[in-house]
Length: 379
Image 1 (tube, rainbow, N blue to C red):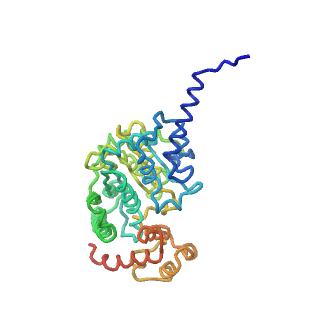
Image 2: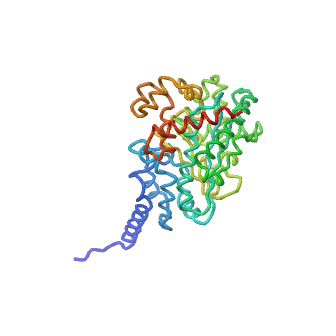
Image 3: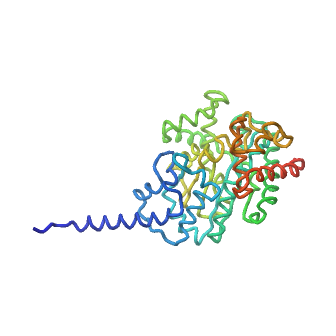
């Protein structure tokens, strides 16, 4: 008796096995089940197997590029279990990996401004810096850009324009000094002038069209979270302002480098997960390979480190010293929770980046010494 074998099924199975093998090679240098697609629980590798036609690994450097953008060395110890980075624009991953070998990568980290400079601010800078450092060793052309959305605050939540401009100037000065002091070798590859940029305003009708699109197309759970972000600014008005702020995120100037590079990577903290839901709506997406990485909340605080964290360390407390500061300096890991220091996670991330993960106390002392030398000169 002869069994009739469906040749098309055999070919499909062989193709599927090859795809799996190629994906395993691509992910071989990464932690197991690295990353979740968007605001879902779906592992990136599994999603790519089911949703991406082109799964060939390509150049052997592709895996190293993927590792650099998803899990640079200093972040890998944090990535485990449910504490995973989120990846938006997953369909662009393969295109970006291929193009990155011959064309510029434009990496972008956006921030805003509070009422004062937080000592935790560099934790946000390091999200881009650590990726830039690893990518520079792999590809020919990669640039990092820091930019700001702070100029929208006076229009959306009544912030004082002069105060916002002052903080933007101070952030610009501090970022420049930090880069020159700790990362001078990367200075030519980083643009931070847009920290003082003014975001071009949309017309009332264009803005309302975007708000309507968000209400229509963003999932109910994400919409509720976006609206709740504005509640503390005033109920319905605050909710609408929060949606308006989200509506600005698809603007090209808020995630595209001025060099018009085709390969765009946005990197941000946990709060960016909401805004990336808007940025990656089909009607707003760019045609270029465009990927956004949201770092896991175990790495830095949910309150962005460029803002003041309630009951967190202020710059003056960090510089002048207090029981909380001295406890953190004496034994960082043990005392970050004992003394209930909001933002300690951010400070420890900076310390890891500055000391190469070897000596947290030394990293904290390096940061404190830098502020002592620099902060009095910041306008």
